[in-house]
Amino acid sequence: MKEKILDCLSKKNDYLSGDQISRHLGISRQGLWKHIQELKDLGYEIVAVPHLGYRLESVPDRLFDFAVAHNLHTKFTGKKIYYSDYLDSTNNLAMKLGMEGALSGTLVLAESQGKGRGRLGRHWLSPKHKGIYLSLLLRPRISPSNSPLLTLMSAVSICEAVKEAIGLSVQIKWPNDVLVNNKKLAGILTEMSAEMDKVNFVVIGIGLNVNNDRKSLLPQATSLREARGEELSRLDLLQGLLRRLEENYLLLEEGGARQIIDKWRGFTLTLGTRVRVAFQDKYVEGQAADIDSDGSLVIRKDSGLMQKISSGDVISCR
Amino acid sequence: MKEKILDCLSKKNDYLSGDQISRHLGISRQGLWKHIQELKDLGYEIVAVPHLGYRLESVPDRLFDFAVAHNLHTKFTGKKIYYSDYLDSTNNLAMKLGMEGALSGTLVLAESQGKGRGRLGRHWLSPKHKGIYLSLLLRPRISPSNSPLLTLMSAVSICEAVKEAIGLSVQIKWPNDVLVNNKKLAGILTEMSAEMDKVNFVVIGIGLNVNNDRKSLLPQATSLREARGEELSRLDLLQGLLRRLEENYLLLEEGGARQIIDKWRGFTLTLGTRVRVAFQDKYVEGQAADIDSDGSLVIRKDSGLMQKISSGDVISCR
Image (cartoon, rainbow over all chains, first blue to last red):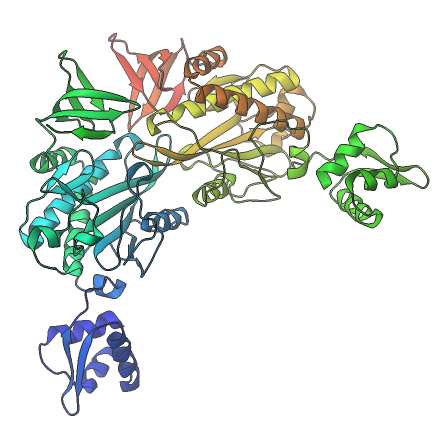
């Protein structure tokens, strides 16, 4: 109902009588008043003037489920949203929901995380109302060995959504870091539940620093606010990101791995540079030559030999 | 306490006075009597004779947690056991426990399953008290791409445990079927929760037909009872299997993949035969030439080309 009331109020930039709204939505004046109060408590500035009605003055930058769903226009992404003020980790909840049979497209959002996780058990700083912390549950028809493509697809989606929202070009460091000015803007943690030959479901966890100021960032991290000098709407950015994720995911499911990799190449910092990659307790050094069809990094070693690396940490790009 | 009482009673093949037992275990005579009643209710035949005490006449063939733990002698396997009369699927519960942080070696047992699962969503018939239905949670230090080795390791463990228990030689069909007389005796469903480059945990589900008669078996399946002509103790077999699983798992963790694969070769029906394998919506036909170091099947096609197959169904072995 809150989504519908917001819909009414945001369509008209003027006062709308309580009578009109309640008739339109088929609820009582009393019921409407209760919902309006709740919206006000959540931070929506709604003025009520006798004989004129209600007017929406401003919306808070909160990622409430109904606010995200409002005008989202996706096919399945975010059809079901679990919103929390605080979670230990959005990925933990999404994995649990996956085990319980939650549908593809189920979205978990938190305004803050206590134990936000990055790859290999690393911590992701998740201060309240500053960043976007989401986990998206998907049920792709791919084999576990092709699942790294989902990480590439997610990195591409972040770059596209940021470009679209504020015109800022951001870069990808293989496999899953999104950078601005060589500092970390976003991270992706893809987890899956799988049989040996079949993925049951995948959870794509994304942490994106949006309105963080310097003191809520690690030295090697940055935020869109830092890069741009002003705050921006997390809600708009999130909706754009969800649309891009769905679009690129559908492309992947329809056999468009090549196109995803091509897009990825357009955003990457890694290809063509000299890299040193930590991989299974050893280092591989050479020229980052290509990305393979399964998302692996192909390195041309000094001996001329090519080596494929499915996962690892790119240590230096000089 | 039940495990300790059984321990006392089974150590002596004669009457043991209630006084001795309760003093030894530090419980009251009343408390002992209550536990003895419970054991009798569970099917343990315990006779009580005035002035003589208690004597254990027989134990039921049930896989009670305390009975399995009794004299198991493993390092970590089955240190925590979840026993149920009925579960929809032991793998489902084990995956859930894994998500909640259960330790490596946690064991889930059920006397029957309503939705016992095989690979690719297939059903595993799990009639009550007939078979062994277990799921073992492990936290191996391997990458997702090496996880098929755990399935090979499990198949080897089943073959070894059956051989040890009743001297019967059983065979493996790649990757995860255990056969007797070309009929299916046991199946393995390995599932995992993983990041792209790190396994969080693995659940090895095993369904083993032990005392099933013909009417509780599918036409293409068999049981140890069918192969041998008489019933056998599921409890003894299970304990042997758990010991073998732990032994082979530790071997794998200590870098013994080669040794596991060598053992696997000794039990296999597949290698050296002509096979047709359903693999990613197509068929590959040729000679099953080898097993690769990551558990993949290597097929020599008629063209002479070698093809590696990470998973699939071997359709015919003629």
